[in-house]
Each structure stands twice: as structure tokens, then as C-alpha cells.
Length: 134
Ligand code: CO
Image (cartoon, rainbow, N blue to C red; front, top):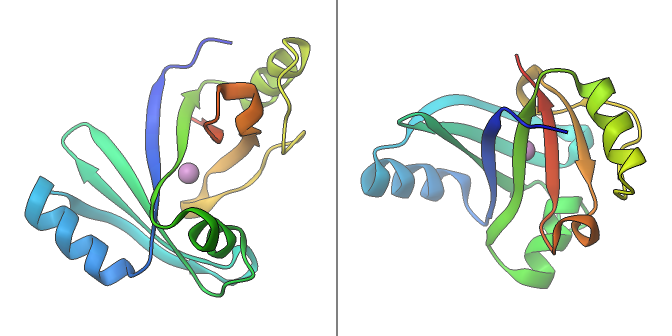
């Protein structure tokens, strides 16, 4: 599979407003999208930094994927998302390469994107996401 590039980096944060303020002040990050997704237990913001993008993720409750991550590891790098041309084809290629897929099929991600996650064990400890080009 050949990714087109890094679509975004995902960062788990305790306080989304504080993170937005800090990323704007320190790195010139500009808000692109912000949304709360109840069924994923997350309040998220995408910010643009030049050509790059960071996804800031705050948990709505402790018993959510991001909440469990924060309890266990504290705030910090959560995942890397790669942009691909064709998500279905990519998932087939990753499976053939022996990657452990968390999502065998594309699913709705944040901000209207179709996404799928790959287990960190298959990417040297980094939770990885593939995103179809929007
Ligand atoms: Co992401």
C-alpha cells in the first residue's frame, strides 16, 4: 500500500479548549472543524498548521476509547493517519500484508471522513489510521 501522505496526527488531550488555545498560540494552528461525536465518546477538533493537520481528541467520559487511553497513558500522541486513494483497496492490501486491522471495513470517522484503524502491534507501537482522500 502506498499512502499519499500523512493526513493528520491524532493527539489525546484533557481539555480541548486549552489545547486549541495552546496550539494556536504556540504553533499558529487554525481551527478547521470541531465536533462532538457521542457514539465515539469524543469531542474533537481538527486544526491546520501550514500544510499539516492535527486532530485534538478529548474524551466525553472515562469509559471511552480516548478516555481509557488518557487514564492509561496520559495526554499525548494517540495515532497517525495516512491518506490513501482507495480505502477498500488499501484494507485488502494491508490484510494481505498481514496487518492486524481493527476495522476490516471502512467506517465513519470524524468530520465526515471514511476511516479504518490498524492495530499498534502492526505498526511498531503506533495506532495507525487510513483515511480516504476527501
Ligand atoms: Co484520526
